[in-house]
Length: 410
Image (tube, rainbow, N blue to C red; front, side):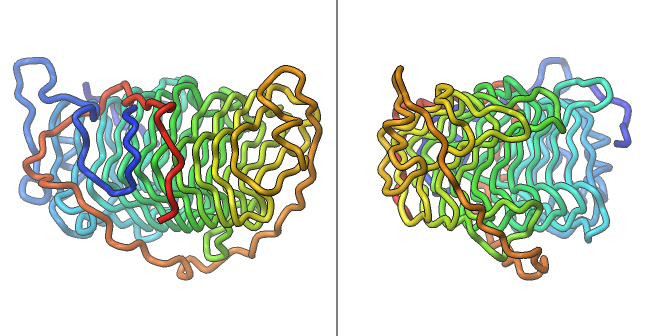
């Protein structure tokens, strides 16, 4: 149904962007007598917003190549909003508009386009702030988000999501963000984040939340599951970071939001997270850090079978003291704090615990946004004009974590 306008998982370890697989969420026409249709921009409507407002559940808004200086709000369930060319269909905020695409409806897919130069976010999925309604079902595929004022692709108070084959750069908060959900029932796979303050941030986000088969490189921090009093559902708990390339997240040209710098994975006050079979290299601070944050205790985190090299320090537990169920095992590494981290934090009863020390590496000052390299052209969706419209499912694909192995450096 339409709402009144408010002002406001598969294990595919490939870093080659490919088409949606057969288990991609969504199906064809929705129930009811009316057959879903395709509305074209600008052939049928001059603007994307006008086409979205005219659409009914199950329809597709298909956007021709061009630069569209508009912000789009979607309040109709089950829409597919798709560009005909990922690099040629561009929503540009000109530094003044707030969000490229803001989705307030369930089951919406945003595909095959670029959002850039918005004051806040490139693509935002969110439930209603006032009522606390949780958005259910979202999908992002073949989307490039670049040089927006806060986040690239942002899901908040939303459940049942798939973000895949997308790219984010030039954001002073994070390229990809999932926040305030538990269970999140979400999957991020086959994405690239570079030249952001943080590649992925998951604040108070967990519960069937998997980040896999992706590249997190040349950000200030690679990935950051964290707890915060600034959002509901604290503390953060239960996310899986598996089979990723996490490289060289010590990039001075990335925009700055906080002082954090030079860390591959930083677990801040989060619990029951798993960091498994990732390749983590080239960090001037540390490869993996597990620490308390803002009064939240880091507990029951598992760091296993990761390949770490070229980091100033590979593995660190800071400020935790007692084991609290945190465990490190099977990692291929050289340095850690405490020095014997896999003995002190063994994945077995009787762990000794102990706290390490980690000197903060001061990040470079804020950069001129023009110093961030423009995003390279990204692979576009195959045959987008004939590809079936597909509303987003409320259930993300599943991932067989046990089958995932550490990827090679490209």
